[in-house]
Image (tube, rainbow, N blue to C red; front, side, top):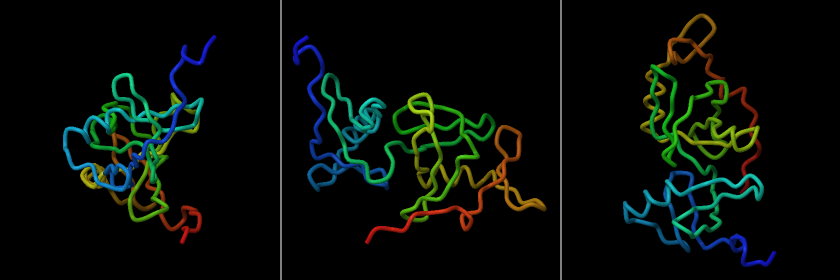
Length: 166
C-alpha cells in the first residue's frame, strides 16, 4: 500500500478556533460570515489521531483549538436537545454542565459516540440564556427543568479547576 492510497498526513495550516467561537487564520480574523459558517460546520474530531480538523470538500486540515471544538448554539428545553455548531443535534447531559477553566463561560459534554468520555462544547451567550431560563430554585439549591425533569445545577465553587497558565 503506497502513501498515496490514504489521505495526506494532517498538518496545522494556521487556523485557530478561539473560545469565543471566532476563527483566525495566521493571526487574522476570519470576517466573512459564509466562510465562518463553512468552517463551523466542517469542524470534526478524529478519535484515532486525537485531533480536531476542519473538512472542506476533499481538504482536511488540523486546526488549533483554544478551548473547545464545538459550541452549543441553541437549547430546546421541552426535549432537552441542543444544536451544535457543526449542525448536529443531541440530548443535553445536564450532569456534564461545568464552568470553563478560562473565564465565566459554561461547558457541557457532547459527542460521546466519538470518544467514551465525550468532548467539551461551550455554550454561546444566546444558548446559555435559553438554558438559564429553565433555572428553578428549590430547598436543595438551583436546578434546571429540562424535558419536564429537574436536574441539579453543579455549584461552580465546588467544581475543581486547574491553575490558569500565565
